[in-house]
Length: 115
Image 1 (spheres, rainbow, N blue to C red):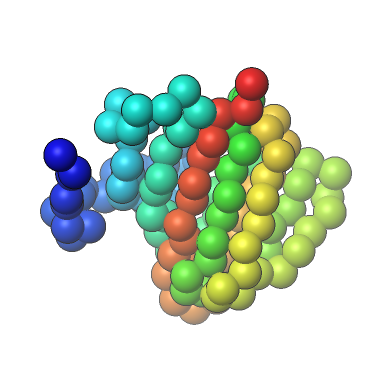
Image 2: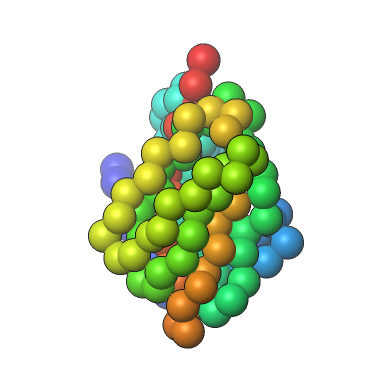
């Protein structure tokens, strides 16, 4: 049987990145796959950022829904983002996401284990 949830019924929790929130739309335990890690919807208030972090052995795909800002890596390289931009962070790549806009930035994140 399939599984259905309304996104509004999924609680917003704090992220481990010192700011922002997220809804975990699908958890590893819900998917029958050795590679799926998570599917989340992230929120980042104006002028805040997800601090520098990496996902060990996990590829992260990010789709920007609302807001604009800057994504940086540990080397100081950066890219601006806006709605409909897509980023792929290879596993173990340190990065931070900063919302420079005046509205809450919103993102979809897909995380896939890399073996």
